Amino acid sequence: MNSLSLLIISCILSYVIAFVPSMPRAISSGRLNSQLQMKVISKKEEWVPVLKSSDIAAGDLVPVEVDGVAILIVADLDGKIFAIGNSCPHLGTPLENGRLGEGSTIVCPLHKSAFSLESGDVVGDWCPFPPILGPLVLGKLAPPEKVVTFPVRAKGQTVEVFVDRSLKERFESKYWSGLLDAQGKATGEYY
Image 1: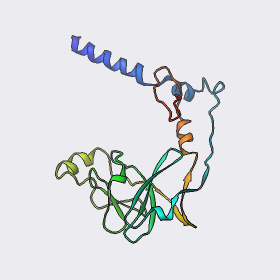
Image 2: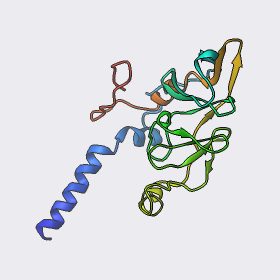
Image 3: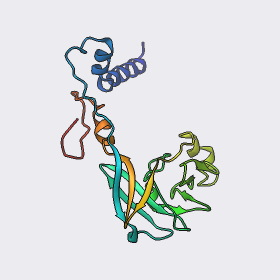
Image 4: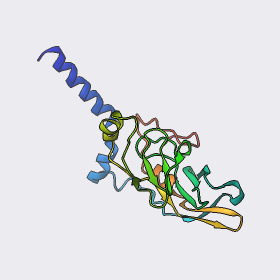
């Protein structure tokens, strides 16, 4: 073997050793099932007040956060209120920097993909900007994906969103602490 082959093999082995967690393999094989107690967190879905009705007008995009979940409250040009995830599913661009499109849609500020405020579905072309590069290259990085939507209602003088308040905690519970784990929580602790 030449030195290039040895270098490639050692890089691959280093990657596998460093980044492939051994804990999940041990769990799935049953060796640690008796020693580990996996924390089961049930859903806690409820209506959560996010802002006053007077804080949003037709055409406004208002970002809010509920228990670590970034949500965008949108009032379309007719004043109808919607709640969507404040992240474009393509590359995670904040949709609060986008603009309202035709009908009840929001347009991503980066690649100009439009999403229905009602269903979250992609409306029109996926990743049409920049011309040529967007559709041929950037749009191929990920398949078309809808934006997350949340039920929303006006109750009295407040706008409420129906959200799973345990979503972040349930997401974090799937992490395990390992030697190379450097993922920090919002609380300053580590997984």
